[in-house]
Image (cartoon, rainbow, N blue to C red; front, side):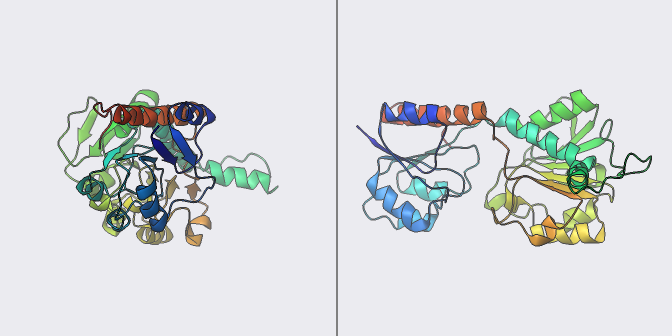
Amino acid sequence: MKTLLISKRLPDTVLEAARTRYDVTLRETETSMTEAEVTAALADYDMILPTLGDAFTGAAIRACDTLRCKLLANFGVGYNHIDAQAASDCGIAVTNTPGAVTDATADIAMTLILMTARRAGEGERMVRAGQWAGWQPTQMLGLHISGKTVGIIGMGRIGQAIAHRCREGFGCKIVFANRSKKTISGATQLESPEAVAQAADVVVIATPGGPETRHLINAEFFTAMQSHAIVVNISRGDVIDEGALIGALQVGELAGAGLDVYEKEPVVPDALIAMENVTLLPHLGTAAFDVREGMGMMALANIDAFAKGEELPNPV
């Protein structure tokens, strides 16, 4: 029976299914795997199911002298915590779980758009603190989303799902920037992220993570935004230069931000925590039971295919 390391606890249905097929070791901790743990695990297990934050760096992979592992079946669509090229060079296949995360992540984007635009977090804090004195005609006026222009950076599956929700549900005009040319019904592609920033009332970051997109959203981007506009990030934390975001918010280059991910997650800068016009969520993008179960089963399908010597359903 092949050995499988699962780096963090998954839904019980997924764990039970895995244990009927493989010799499973589950790390009973909420901490991510360090580089030293990764190097050791690559020597000890046939397959590993990593999750966000596990340090599968090139250095950790290349440091393994007695490589046993031949598959990293990532739990999640994003795999910027895995050096896929280093893995490939060492003969390790890498898979992910696309599709299973699309709608749930798009829903969290809509949550952040509405919470930030309508100042919902600020309002809830006011009520909980006993500071609400009753309804007033000009109290906590926010940005009305219906009919506004929504700009999307990264028009993959998730970007398109967000565009559909905004266009069909709120009558929004959709503009977007993408690394390649794309024809999307009901949406207009602009020449650059900065062009989207200039045009949009709401900007949603939905691009993949990785070295190519690190700090794609930077000081120049925020300067291009309209002062009443908001930015939402549901991609990866380091796609946004957090220092530049804080500076832009402090001088009023944009009206607010909604964040589900952070540059040095789980560390959130005190400056962001202190800002009333920033909505902060604890990486809830796929945090629904049926979604996480689906992700786990998709990862397991990749593991099953590998174990049987079949074509991998979701190679990266």
